[in-house]
Image (cartoon, rainbow, N blue to C red):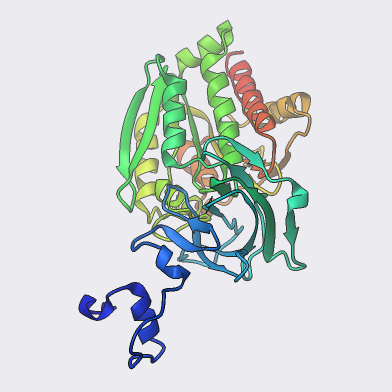
Length: 402
Ligand SMILES: [Zn+2]
């Protein structure tokens, strides 16, 4: 697109007026409130003492308009997709800055998509509280959600889940593994040039592969991943020590950093659902991760490949119990552990599609391992998500050290 010559522009406001056919206007009156927005601002709209801002990792893909009364309407837009999307996850994350404490009405406009994530609020981007349900009003089609907020002076963050940009789970995993002799490895580079970081350690007879966040907003799955990793690394009894001593542990905490930091709903920077790309491996994220896992696993038996996700309910997708894997008998043991230990055990669904492009299907085809897609309910309390991860780690330790 051809840029306007800057000599014709002066200020952005002048360009806007010229576009309305007002070339002969002799002089400009005092400028409207748009002049408050500095050039190159990460503000997407401002007025009436309130501004909406992006410009942080995992910020959503938004535009914004404001009524004359200072009510805000934020569009929630998705990333361009190579294929027709499935399982829409309309992600939102933005900052509101208020000149003084005031109530505010913010409508999330999803056009033809529907509201999925119950909003979370934060004053600092780190500590989050869910907005009470009676502060969220949906239209009949659920294509618009209106939030009633009491803004303090300064910045308030609004997001679909507590923010967890790409650095977060890498740093969490690094801390969780500290002192355990793990290697941190940059196994590849994302399409938009972000590092792809994995960790590997433990023993050398069997192997386990653990990943999460292929799909950007699925942070309740990441909580279960954290429960799993923490229990696997910190359980103190003999069995746990033996499992760690005999099992090579391969972790991919952030396989889609472009999607996460770009505020994408589901895809990577190439418009691809990475968890449909494991067979064809068209994207650098999947290709390099699959190659790194194969290299790390070598000829070890992989006891399972667990991939933690989120959706509208907690459910485990597993291969059929007669699948050709030496570790397949672990699945009923894992299910029994969940049923015994969790207050709301997940449903199970058994199937295998060798061409589906999921990590789960790839694990069975390439590693002869049970690939397990662990889906946590979007709104599961953090402690319950962690408990599921802990129960999975305990089941793994107890079963494979019999
Ligand atoms: Zn997912």
